[in-house]
Image (cartoon, rainbow, N blue to C red):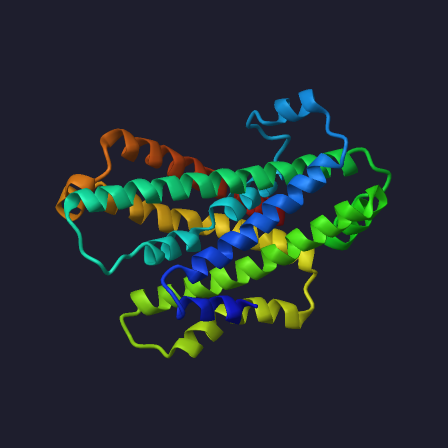
Length: 276
């Protein structure tokens, strides 16, 4: 399926983006269906929207959610996909920038909505359960106990998520290998290199649920490596001209980067201390 998504890019300027958007719509719809079919405690759900940690162990979960939502490799991919070969005046560039801001806000907002729906479904089904549910198979079985529609919606959303993430991840790796090595690497080799880690994990028989959680944590550690250079470059008027970030934007982005780096640093200290 990843190969089919990547092949769409050669057929048109926006085919790949539209296909990923369609898969993302399936994910959103699937988890909203599940959310509508479970009993959610409204006041407790609203209280849970207040940021906070339940303990040191919750930092791992928080960094995983952060990595799954932001996905640093998508920052590079989005930059590549928004390149328009057609030149235009400054007004055209500003219009494109407005559209891209709207695109990012909608994408991040919907991604946050999906994460909230997943957490609410998990809390409604598994909080206080006699036996812990720590696998995707267990989640599907628990949803099947609610009704078949819930289980099917979860399976469909999970399938769409796998297709979208594999296509997006491979495309991002392809773009990064193409742009940063400054060498002409064959297209199939670039795609094979980006798929190799995931295929290796599958071949080794690693628990898929554990691998999924840890992969999201690893993604959160990659966010500063994408965000900090982006912040330093977009604030420079000699590069960006009138489209350079305002000081307030730079300050806000810097604070966000500091929080992310702090979370990652705390997690590293926690792991090293526990190992010692």
